[in-house]
Length: 154
View 1 (cartoon, rainbow, N blue to C red):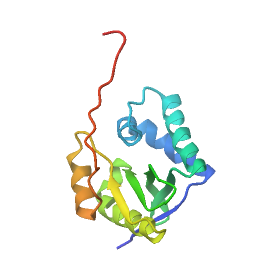
View 2: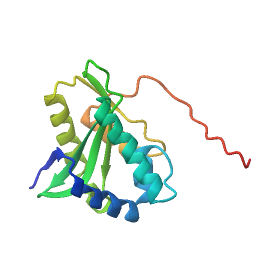
View 3: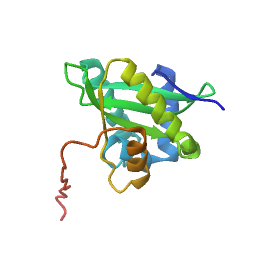
């Protein structure tokens, strides 16, 4: 049975991100934390994440199974001590049966880098993601955050 592995993001992976946006904008929006109205919003969201990678406050890897990308993982809110981070995982919908393997690969790779505490992303209305985070052993988020979106139209 093929395992999942993580590797560095390359320029060619932008095609995978575009393809996944076209097939699953809602899922990518959940990963990024906001609704994606168009491809430009998706690009801006990933550019913000990649900017965090350049600043050292985030890390990003592609997840592969049998040498083909099936998703990606990001680690955000990384302090200068680089011992804790918030984990975000996206798996392409037709490959979600490999989510547990992907999460374990992410956990293995990230802890091998010296991270001691991995905090689960608060998954709004995504019970499967919450169950996966708990099963892999990601810590619950230390704060409960209430969020309200304001719309000027009312």
